[in-house]
Image (cartoon, rainbow, N blue to C red; front, side, top):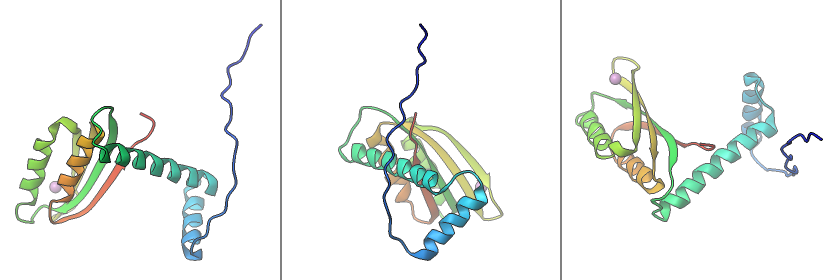
Length: 149
Ligand code: NI
């Protein structure tokens, strides 16, 4: 007799959320224009990302040196700012052990975009991100700790 392995579907729960109407309208418009998911799927995606990030934050906060997280840090900065690129390079060399690769894009005459792919112990990755965050002049720093790897 052949048995088919099937993944048991998780029981679904319903709940309600209160939020400003314009925020919900914008959210729904984005979902609709992406054509990829519905509101529930979009919320599930946000919640998984939030949980992964909080798990990492908790592990990093307790100084966890075991285990490994993957993530990216995406930076936007003006390379003309005095010392900024020197400090950025210095920090990346200090934490070379958590950097898998870096992609640099010259957006325009002034602006650079850099995406750093990271892998390392939660506490090490956090220290690296703190060191990046301490560099003055960076216009934006987006951190993503990925789930499912
Ligand atoms: Ni550049």
